[in-house]
Length: 252
Ligand code: NAD
Ligand code: ZN
View 1 (cartoon, rainbow, N blue to C red):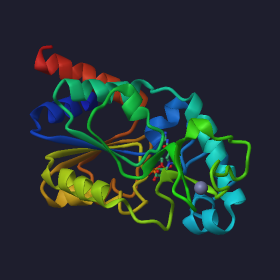
View 2: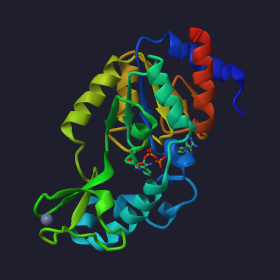
View 3: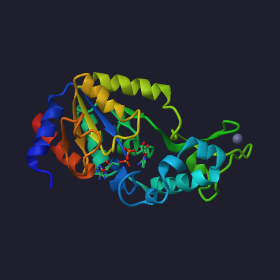
View 4: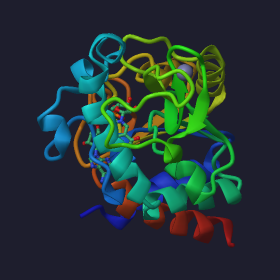
C-alpha cells in the first residue's frame, strides 16, 4: 500500500517543477490488459520478444514474427485507457505535464487525451508493405493470415513500429533528447528501463540536473543508480491519487 505521504511528496515535486516530462513503458498498459515484455504472465513467457520482434525475424521468417504481432494486435484492439492513462491526460490539462515519451505502441495515451506524445517506438495502428510501401490501417488487415500480405503486390506487411535491430526514427530521438535535457522532473512510469536508447532518457535528464522519480511495483535498473526515489505501486492506482493531490495543492 502506497502511503499518503509518498503521494503528497510526488504531487509537491510535480507542482514545484517548471517542466515535467514522463517516460512510459509497457507497465503503464498492464491494467488495460496488455501484457508487458518482462515480468510474469502473458505470451512473452512463451515467445522471446528479442527474437520474435527482431527485424531479421520479420524479414526472413515473417510467419514467426507475426505470431507475436497478431497476438499483440488482438490485445490492443480490445484495450481501453486505464485510470493511469486518464490521470496523465488530466495532468497535462492542469499544465503539469509537458510531454510523454512513450515506448508503448498501443496508442492508449492518445485515446486517453494527451496531446504531446513522442511515440519513441512508433505504433501498431498502421502497417506498411515491405515491398511496395503501400500504407494502410491495421484495422484493414486480417490478423489470422500469417503473415498478412499487401493487397497490391502480395508483399509482407510490417507494422509501423520499431523492431529490435532497427534505429529509432530520427525525429522521435531528437525530440526525446531535447525534452529529457530540458525538464526538471522526469516521471518514469512502468518501464523496466533496459531497452536502449529509451532507457537513456532518465540518465540524460538526471545529468542535466532533473529529479527522476519512478512509479513501478518493482525496482528497476534505474532505481539505485539514477532515480531520486521510487513509488512502489501500480501506475493505475498511484497516478490518480497523485493527480488528486496536485489539484488540491493548486486549489483547483
Ligand atoms: P517491460 O515489459 O520491460 O517492463 C514492464 C515494467 O512494468 C516492469 O518494470 C514492471 O515491474 C512494470 N509494471 C508491471 N505492472 C505495472 C503496473 N500495473 N504499473 C506500473 N508498472 C508496472 O516494459 P518496457 O520497459 O516498456 O520495455 C518493453 C518494450 O516492449 C518497449 O520497448 C515497448 O515498445 C514494448 N511493449 C509495448 C507494449 C505496449 O505498447 N503496451 C506491450 C509490451 C511491450
Ligand atoms: Zn505491396
